[in-house]
Structures are given as structure tokens and as C-alpha cells.
Length: 404
Ligand SMILES: Cc1ncc(COP(=O)(O)O)c(C=O)c1O
Image (cartoon, rainbow, N blue to C red):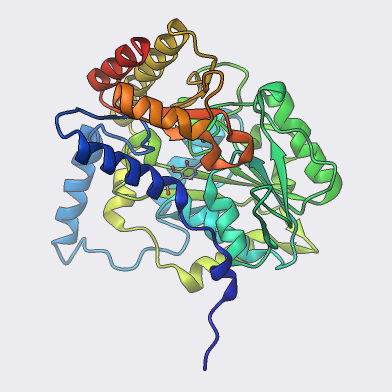
């Protein structure tokens, strides 16, 4: 009889969001008259912009005509999109990335989940704590995480880098040298960022030790401050040690449309092998490309009108972030994030842990957020609110929190 991949049996249940749903459903059933406001979601709420919609319609029409119909897309993505990405996201920012170092995909989740495949099964992995769970779970599936320590709430073969108030939610360079380092800035869930000088330290550390950095910049478009790098390739030497992951989900609202990309510079080699070639092989074998119409929609994000509309959408969400930040501060909470990211990270009030605060907020203010401990043990005593809601509902939620 065939054996199953036992690593999958080690996975922890997706406790966080199912537990949230369970508690919210139970409360709603018992209190059907209460209007619940959800500030826990990581999904966008604004519709696609007019330029994107126009490009989608035009591409659909092309698919209806034999002379313009497209079948399978090129492995790495259409050139029109890779050229637009290379120019706007990299060359215009002073980063020397060429279109053939860009791999178009159907989103950053798949890429950050799949990229570990090109590394050795014994690679030592480092993640931030708290962390976007995909980085950990995909390494559990691949057998790199070891065993789960119930008491500590950690996998014993993963190097955790605590992100706490004391280090400004920016991890310290680990004492034990990892092979693979997952960094995400602006960060989900804490909303924290690091400066270019801090990121340069990571690049230097990786180059010195032969590590590879997987840099998830899914929230890059939310950066508002000067000294925060938009790409790891702004750092000297990053092309020799870093892979960058990007998404169209949170800047242009493509969470349902699906589009992202991964950058692997040609210089990036380990053990004499270029990682670009490995990922190209993997892409060619296991993936048949993002849909033509979606890649045309992605191209429209880089048009002049597309850029202006995207900026407006981000401004809408960041207005929510400010409402949340100001409201929480006025109510006496200790808060961070929300300036370069759509996530606000707050310290739960004295005496309440993350889940106790969740219950308090749900039952007394009818507001739903995400307990910080769900992202890792260092998230205990913290809580995440997101800026992706409708503005009126967000403002009402904050009034309720202030009146708690
Ligand atoms: C840090 C981070 N990376 C990647 C993703 C997934 O992006 P995509 O929608 O492109 O798959 C998310 C989504 O919430 C995220 O928070």
C-alpha cells in the first residue's frame, strides 16, 4: 500500500482562522441583532480600478478572435508584463533587474510556498516570530521543520527570530546561521519595516555565510517613509543572495484575479548552480503561466492612469490605517505598524492575552481582529487589525473601541 507524505500529518490544524470563525459564528448565533465589523481580514474590499477593468475587457475580446487568440503563455510570463515590471519596479528605482530575471506567476503565496523546492531537503530555515504561516507550513510539508514542541509552540528544526517591542519588531541576525532566511517587509502581521541600512546588514550576513534570503515584498506599495527600501535589490550585493517575491494582490486588488512574480537574479548561485535555472526548470515543468487576460490587467497597473488609480486605492486603505492608529492611540493603546503597511499591531490591555482580548472586542465592541499569538509565540499579548475594510465601518469600529 502506498504511504502518504507523513510530513503532512505533522502539520498543525489551521487553528487561527477556524477558531476565529467558530467564536464569531457562536456569538452571532446568540446575538443575531448585533452588527459585527470585521477588521481581521487580509483581503481587499475595493473593486478593480477602471484601467484594469478596461484592459481585462480588451484582452477578453482578443481571446474571442482567432487572429488575436492566445493559448499557453511563455514560461516566464509575457514580455510586455516583464518589461513593465523591470522598468517600473526596478530600473526606475535604480535596481539593475532585467525582464528575464522576472518570473510571472499567479500570486506570491504559491511562489513563497513553492520556492523552497529548489533547496536541499536538509536546509536550515529561519523565520520571524510572529510570521506569515505559509513559510513555516511549506517547510513542514517538505520535512525541514523537525517536530513541533507543544510547550514552546515552535518547530525544533526551524530557527525563530523573535520580533518584539524591544527590537522594534525587526529581527536580530541569528546566532545559528540559517541556509534560508524568510524576511517580509513591510511585515505581515506586525506592519513593521526596516531601514535600508538594516536590510543591508542582512544582505551582508547572507553573503558572508552563503545563506539565501527570500524577501517577501507583497506590501511594498504601502511604503510611505523615505528610508524604507522598496526592494532588497536596493542593497549592495543583494543580487548574489536574494530572491524577491511580489504580488498584485494588495496594491491593485488582484486577490481574486491572481497575479504575482518572483525575481531571481542570474548572479545568484549556490554550490556553483544558478538558482535562476532551477526555478526556470521548475516553472517550465510544473506551471503553465498566469492567464493572458490577467497579465494584460497587470500591465495596465503600470500605465499612467493605472498608477494613479492604484495610488488612490492605497490612499483609501491608508486612511483606514490612520483612523485605526489615531483611534487606538486616543483610547490609550500601545500601537505600531499602520504607517508603511495596512496592518496595525497593538498591545493587548494589561491582564488580557491575545485570545482574551479577541473575546472582549467581539462581545463588547462587536469588532473582529486577529489574535497575535496565532502568528507565533512572540505574538502573544498582541493583536492585529487590518486597514482593508470599508472606511465607514472602520471608523465605526474605532468609535466602539474607544467607548469600550
Ligand atoms: C506576506 C504575504 N505574502 C504573500 C501573500 C499572498 O499574496 P498573493 O495574494 O499574491 O498570493 C500574502 C497575503 O496575505 C502575505 O501577507
